[in-house]
Structure formats: structure tokens, C-alpha cells
Length: 295
Image (cartoon, rainbow, N blue to C red; front, side, top):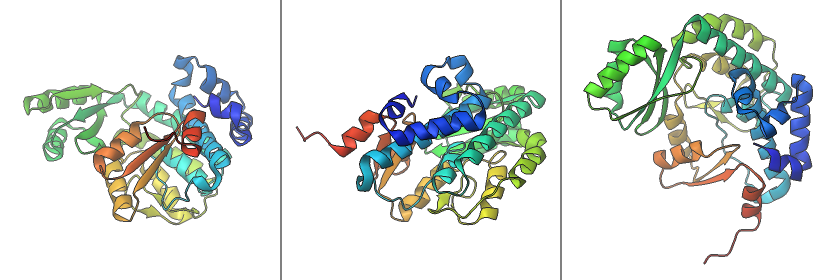
């Protein structure tokens, strides 16, 4: 991921070069070449995704200039919130990389201390799922879109929740390939250490409002951002409410910048009337710069 923008745009090369220098190892090589088993380790994939997403943004800004509109808001899902904050200069890119690498280490450590997992629940009533969670002792950890929820908890309790949900009509339950019960109270053992890390970072008010994962409202101050990054480790990610807030406040076009198209798909389910555009590589930038004529 990220190789095409690295090869084409000087601004993207500068992002990857800075990431390598900041982290002290060639994260760019992991992004471009893998191997997948190393790239997908929690401690590596978090800085790799931040670097690639910001490289795609810088490439789009370089390649499109004024054709890339100035955003009314920025938002990111979980890890993506760090990229959004770096993109708005609320924290430096170097600090964002170091923070997410430490975040990844601590999340993995929390998973070792309190083994758990995450389970996507598709096309199931939220109120009923909340009852299931209360009975099984797990938590809703992501509200991604209508009909797409994620629960987190200890392995045995997730199994109990799965049985209860199936008994009440759930048809699709998908275990997620993660190393812990993220965005739940099972992350509590590492909160104090992560808070100490956050206290050593300089935050600034963002140049563009960034929508909070936890409250689904704009983050406007350095203090609010620091608290947000601590809170989102153990609280539910309110992605559906975040998109609904932006749409209510006039957003009609969303750009998903970085690898994948997951968020664009979620946005279309939340706000079907809006337009979504993905920028993950050179081809996407060229298509926006010189769109093909309608057939």
C-alpha cells in the first residue's frame, strides 16, 4: 500500500521518508513489500496506516491543487482519528506516528493481560444487541452503520453473546482478526500508561474541526483532543453518529483517503444521498484530475 503515490509524488515520498526516520525502521518497506504477517502486527500496522493515509492526502493535495476542496470537517475511524488530527496540525506527524506505535504496543499488552476479541454483528437490532451484551457481559464497541455493529469482550463471554444473539435471530456474526477487545473496558489496564504518554505530547486546536469518535461532536481544543485519544481506547466508536452529524451540517461529499473503501461503504449506508470518493493511489488522483467523459 502507498507505493504508487510514493513513486509519483514528492510530497508522498517526504511523508514515508519522515516516517522511516521517526520510527527508526523502514516502515515504508513494510507498506510496499510486506510480508503481511509483519505488517499486520498491531504495533506495525498502526503507524503504517497513518503514514500511508497521510501520504495519500499529501499526494492528492499536490496532484489536484484547488480541485481538492477544502474540508468542512475531518474524521477518522479509531486509528484514523490520528491521521485526521495530524492532517489538521492538531499534532505533528512525528508525534502521531510515535503515539500510534505506543498505542499499538499497549493495546496488544492489554490483550495479553485480559484476553478478548471483537465480533461484528450484521443486520441485527441494536436494542436487542444491547440486551444480549448486558446478559453476556460484553460491550458494543463500534456503531459503524445501520445494521453493522461490533461487540468486544472476553473470549468466553463473546461466545455466550454469539449464542444469545443467534437465539434471538442474528444471522451473521463475524469474528474480527484482532489481538484484543478494543474500545472496551478490557483496555483499562493500559489507560494510565497511555495517559502519561499523551501528557508528553503537544496538542493544538485543529485547523479544521475533527469529529470525535466518542461524542460524535467537533473537537476544538488541545485539552479535548488529549482526552479524546485516551477515551477512545475504551469507549465505543460512534461512527454512524459522526457521519450523521456531518451530513446534518451540510456535508454532501465525503473523501475517504488512504487504503481501502470500508468507510465509504459505511457512509453510503448511513447517508445514501451523499457522494463518496476514494483516494488510495495514483489512479484515483488521476481520475479526479481528468475524469473520463460520460459514455
